[in-house]
Each structure stands twice: as structure tokens, then as C-alpha cells.
Amino acid sequence: MSASSFSTPALSNLLIYSLFTFTSPFDLEDKTQSRREFYLRSVYQHVFKDVKQVSSITHTSKLIIGSLSQTLSNRRIALCVTGSVAAVECVALSRLLMRHGSEVYAVMSPMAHKIIHPYLLEWATGNPVIVELTGQIEHITLAGKHDERVDLVLVAPATANTIGKMANGIDDTAVTTTVSSAIGAKIPVLVVPAMHESMFDHPAVVENIKKLKEIGVHVMSPRMEEAKAKIPDSEEIASRVISLLGPQDLNGKHFLITAGPTRGWMDRVRFITNPSSGRMGIEIANEVISRGGTVDLVLGPVSLSPPREANVRKVETPDEMLSSVTEILTKSKADVFISTAAVLDYVPSEMVDSKIPSGTAELAINLKPTVKIIDKVRKNHKKLFIVGFKVESGVTDKELEKRAKTKIESGVCDLVVANDALREGVAFDTETNQVLIVGLRGFVKHVPLSMKRDVAREIVNTIVEAMS
Image 1: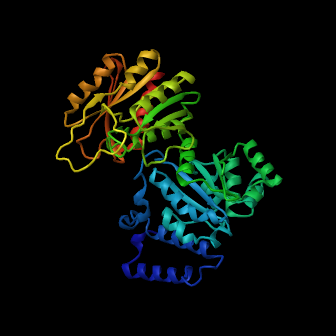
Image 2: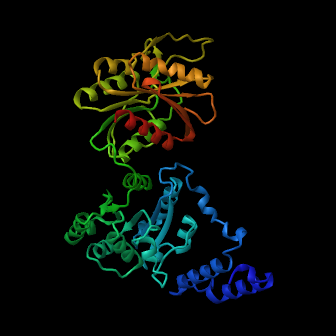
Image 3: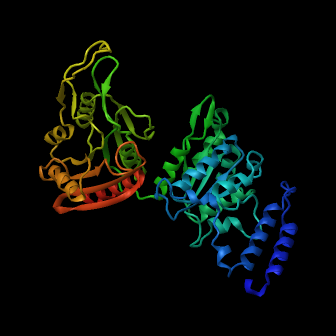
């Protein structure tokens, strides 16, 4: 039977009958509610399978998919939520994963939907929420041995109770059964514990986490604060997800990255600087870490948070940045140096050790050039792979390429990433960028205007290719 078999009134009557038969807004606690909703959706799909204007409708919550990056594009994640108060963080977590490009399907334990209602996660993800297992065999649909299964099962938050059940193969909720199926189907599983510290330290919980790790389940370390094992920030969880689902082609590689602006002090209260936010360098650090590399990040004064996994050194002036870079390269073996920092080319010739009085008609400040950090690094480290950044203003692509090539031809850089600050959405203090990557032997790659995380991935891809 197809949709064309029904007249418009017949369709309306069927839908009205279905609505009042299979759903009731006053029956939210009815344990058969999810079954009714699944059945109703099946009726709609059957009736309307040939009606394009209906089948093309997408939940508007999905409009955010890929708005931050395409890192998780075409990936499907099952987000399993259990009865910890940290379940309130799952809306933000699911939305962040979607913003990186993934589809998210929520699965809730009975205790989880006493903390947050399934409708909230349905709104957040744009997909029906599984609160019990039915004849639809939802755990197999999501995490069985077939091509349409999810790419990752994320249990966040995971209570001590659920951790114990997962470790011992006890399948009495939609969450634990989905996880068991995923483990058997060799689907990656990431568990994010959240509970009081006293529970986290219980020998049985410690042993159960050990068991999970031994069978290949990934377990994130919680934040230990206020006598609690708290769920990590959504950004940190998303970073781990990206790492698990992305390539691990930088294992054993160490990167030194500079990022952010520097300051040149005029007196005790004034300085010259530039509008760099440090976002590009931070996103490159995130990308490197997600692919298995390690990072030393020398960071100028910024408001953005660096990745927790990076070794961060905070600096302020060009001299401090040079000193930190020199020290790191002396003490550790870096494979790649990426100079994304917007280091001042000129600083005041001298700093007045007090506040310069205001009110004068004119004030002249003499400037002196700073040491080119990238040139200094090349002089002392001949075999180091160096990536430079070059910002220009109001030039053509051809001229931008020509200027970028000067650092390649001089032997200072192996790659140069160039952009034009006058173009909309490019360079300083934006979430997007458009760059030209120039390399040896005439290599040129154009990266169109994209989110900086996507640009970072293209830059790291190019580095990996150039070093292979």
C-alpha cells in the first residue's frame, strides 16, 4: 500500500487516529510510550514513503551539524546516558559533537530519564531517544554487526552501577545492552565516569574500570574536584571522540607550536600588540593531539583555552617567546616546529618604568626590530621540519603565493601558510580562515574559507604528506 492509495481526507483521518491511539501528552511516564512513538513513526514512514515533501523534512536541530567543523562528518555516535547528575551536561555534549559533523543517537537508562526528560535529548539530537528495548531491537540497530551501525558508543556520564554492569556483561537496560552489543561487534566504546570520589575509589569500581580497559574499552579520566570525580568538559570529551575516530598517523611525533599575540611594553600600563586570538595555533595543537602526536605549545596572552593534553608555556613578549622556543628545542627533540604566533616585528626601543603622563599633545615612541624566531630556529636546527605563517593585506592570490615562496626559497621553511587579513572571515580574531599552503618543488594548496579546525586538519594533512 502506498501513499497514493489514500485520498487526502483518508490520510488526515489515519493520522488523527494514529495520534490519539499511539501517543498521549498526558502519559509521559507510561513505560510503553517509546514503543508507541516507534510504532507511530513506522506508520508515518509507511504511509508517506512516496511523498517527497514529507520524507524530506529534517528535524531543525540538525541544522547545526558541521557548523564548527567537518571533523566528524558522516560519523554516527550513540550517546548512552546513565543516572548521574552529570546527565545535564549531555545536551551541550551532543550538540558539540553535532557541530563537528556527526549524527548523535541518544540511549538512556531508566534512572537517566528521571534526571533529564528524553524529549530534551530528542530536541538536542534531532533523533528519537531510546529509553527501552522493543521489537525494533534498537541495541542491534545501533551497535550490531552490520554496515549501518554507529561508529562509536559513548557512555557519558557513566555511573559506578553501569560501569559494574558493563564490565561483567550484565544487560538489564538499553544502555548496558547497547554497550555489550558494541563490544561484541568491535565498535569503539568510550566510557566517561562521573560519581563522588569515594565511589570512584571503591576497589570494585577500580577493578571494573580495569576490566573494561583490558577488553579494549576506552575510559576517560574524570576531573577530581570538590571530592567528586566530575565529568570532563564537553570540549575535552569531543576531542577524545575525534581522536578515536580519526587517523593516528602522528604517534611518536612531537610538535612545537607557537600561538597568539605578543606585547611590546611602552610603559607600566601601555603596550602595542595585534588582534591575534591564538585560535589557529590552538586548533592545530588540537588536531595534532587528536592524531596521536604530542605538543609543546608556547602561547601568548589569549582568552581561549588550550588543549589540556598540551604542555603549555604562557609568554607575553617576543623575547619571552624566543627564550621558550629555544629552551624547548634544546631540551626535547621536536619533529616539527609550527610558528603560528603573531610575533611583533617591532617593539618600543625602551620601556619607561612608570606610567607616561597623559595629556601631552603628541607622543613619539621609537621602535626597534625584534629577532625573527623562525630564522633563529632554522639557523640552529638544520633538519627540523618548519612551518611558517605569513599574513599579508590586500594582495592577489598570485602575489600572496609569490611572497610566501620567499621563505621556502631561502631555505627557512618547509611549508608556509599564507593568508590575506583584508578578506572577510580571514586571519585575526575569527573562527574561520582561508589560506594558501606553499611548499617545496612548486607545491601549492588552496584551502577555501572554512572553520579553523578544518583548516588545521588540512595543514596537518599537508605536513604528514610532506614528511612521508
